[in-house]
Length: 97
Image (cartoon, rainbow, N blue to C red; front, side, top):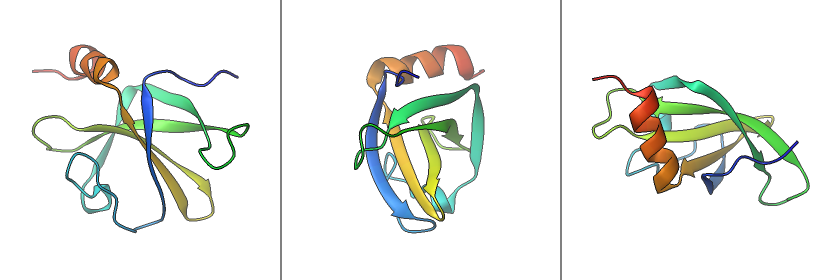
């Protein structure tokens, strides 16, 4: 399985611990899964390990805020942010109005 291009590692945290995604802590907002589904990322601590994680948008955030997140192990979450080109793709293809 190849890793997906267009995503930058942001943080690995215990579930509920503060994370900064475009100035917002995602644990304090609703997550909307994006229709693109999931992406494959390398574990930053163990690059040979890959994980499939889901792409989300923070509900109601203006401008639209995207991220990918997944539980790497019990209550340990990883967060990734899109590159500018991936963000533009998501805005063009996945956000209406």
